[in-house]
Amino acid sequence: MKTKFSVKNSGFFGVICLLLSSLLLSNCATENRCAKKFPQVAGYDSVYVEKIKEVPIYVPGDTINIEIPAECDDQELFVMENEQLRYELSIEKGKIKTKYIIKPDTIKILVPEIHEKIVIEKKPVEIKYVPKFTSLMSKLGIILALGLVLLFGLKIAKFLK
Image: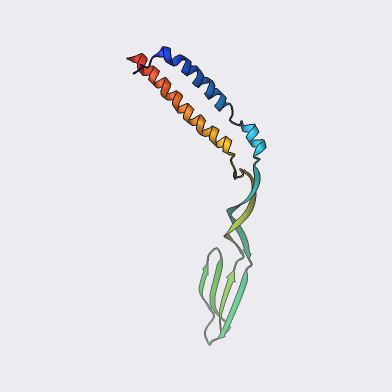
């Protein structure tokens, strides 16, 4: 004997499914209850931040004099000058004289600067044990929710025909 599926026959079944689903779904722990039961642990993590910094280095000036005896007339042979150096080459009183004048300067060197920053993060603790009743109720809730979706899908399909 075959019975046809009708909206009249499924009304009572739908009410029972709705009551059971509300009972099973209300069994879920809320976020606050879960947070009290399974508190998060604060973990420390180090982050290294690297910045490039210009470090000025002062280079003092210096002078170098070199004299070599030679039998020549007095004369100025060569003079060169730029921002950091002056060079003179001349013959005076029977001596070849060279004079280097190094001007003081500041050199900038790029140096990595590393800062350690400690960050406190709340890390959830792994749940090591789930009670069998909770696991069973969650599985039943999933099956019941899928059944309700299927039931309402069939009702909508029947209604559209």
